[in-house]
Amino acid sequence: GETIWTTKGLSDMASYCSPIIVNHKGRRILLTETAKLVVGIDADTGNLLWTHDHPTDYDIHAVTPLYKDGLVYFTGGYGSGGGALELSPDGSAITVKWTDKSLDCQHDGVVLVDGYLYGTGHKTSELMCLEMATGKVMWRTKEVRQGVVVYADGMLYVYEGPKSGIVSLVKAVPTGFERTGQFTVTEGTDNHWAHPTISNGRLYIRHGDALIAYDISVK
Image (cartoon, rainbow, N blue to C red; front, side, top):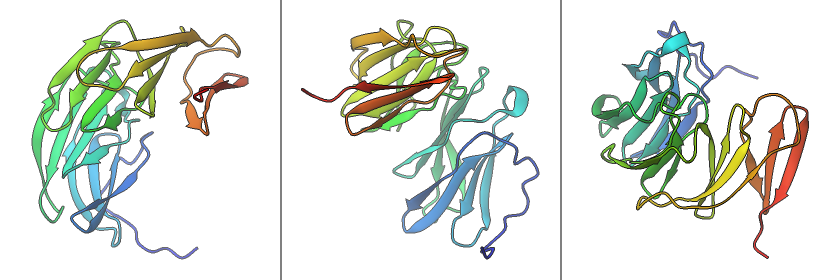
């Protein structure tokens, strides 16, 4: 198709991070991370609005940024951690709102639920909850280790990897860790890395050469 725009000025685009587009006070902004930067781009013109340095080991940024109420959350593994950037009213500039080293999510994703962030650390290998507005750690636990976190209907589904394959069902609440169930993925081969998907009352997990569907609907 026809090229609408091309952004220049980024020399380190290699990354594993998926971009998102958010609406900030009427301006559409594309948010992503490159090998060494958090980036904001005008989604309609392609103009580079701002960058924020965030180095990690091996230049790996695999966690998509999150946005709420003018704050952009970012994180990376290997102890680099993350933080929140506050956008100016027109989205053309940023200031650092807070930083955090505890939630150094490597590639498993972080979810935002009712103003709170849930994810697992890489070096800490803990499931934890942070307040998006302040970065305050609400709770953390080693009962659930490094894993992919997905969310549905008030619950976190955490698929631990690379070896254990344990799936934990955890309440998405900032008041404390509450696990209501767990099971282990036994089908499939090699490491447990894939991101689960939830649709129409089914939890889908791929493990190596196997794709498994679990019925999680209310009976």
